[in-house]
Length: 161
Length: 206
Image (cartoon, each protein chain N blue to C red):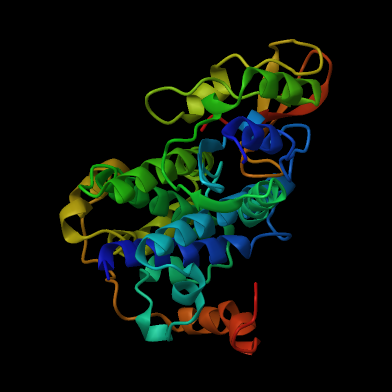
């Protein structure tokens, strides 16, 4: 009979469809796994509501459960329970080494423009904090574009959600 | 059906559609990227709100007749000029913030939770609008665009929330262009927006 640790281990092998250096477990989008009599109920939170990979991720979770010989039930939870703070320490390090600056911690209220323009953001390539905001938006909704004045390299900064 | 939520979702769907019209042709490459992301988020919000109202969001998004949509005329307008486009984005985000904040206090936890999620994403749209408002606010073309769109912006909100919007943007309340009647521009958009869905055989998988 399948166990919850086996399910978590299988989910840790599923890459994020857009940033495959991190897994769905690294991203912190799996809110809960409940195993009962060969039935696995998974609560899954989207990063961004408009994420085009939502269906692909749901299917990947279902397939992983099915491949363990259990019956999947994946529920998408569209509330504020996912935050970029849920990206694991290992996930952050994987992001940074792939050239994505990990997100700053979440604060009580949503971030403001002045914070993006004046707070300290570190270049993932050279570690310099001499970086500036290039564009609030990037190749996907979860990323901004910044430029490092020290190593003269543009980089992608994860937005804080 | 909750008319307030349906109106919100329809606004997000239609403004997302309008924002996406700048993909590939915005005046700056950065704005191609920004408008594409904003459009994707807005349509994602529409999908999530439709799902609060029904199991299949596509049925609400694409299977209704034109007169069943509840969007505000502000989002329907086909704006071909950058000053108007930015004026709408700025006014829309100012109005949207007021209703989303109210929904974050909703008694239904599903509504309040989703509103909190939407707010975190909209924060980045507000930053984008704030940046552009800062750049353009003294330009006559922009000021004229805001003047023209102001009655439409008021129509995004129910009457009891309009004074707050007027205070935020520093303008006086005027008679609003209300939800209900649709512009001719929405009819054209509806044709395009629903064309794929209408052309597919029943039972098609997406």
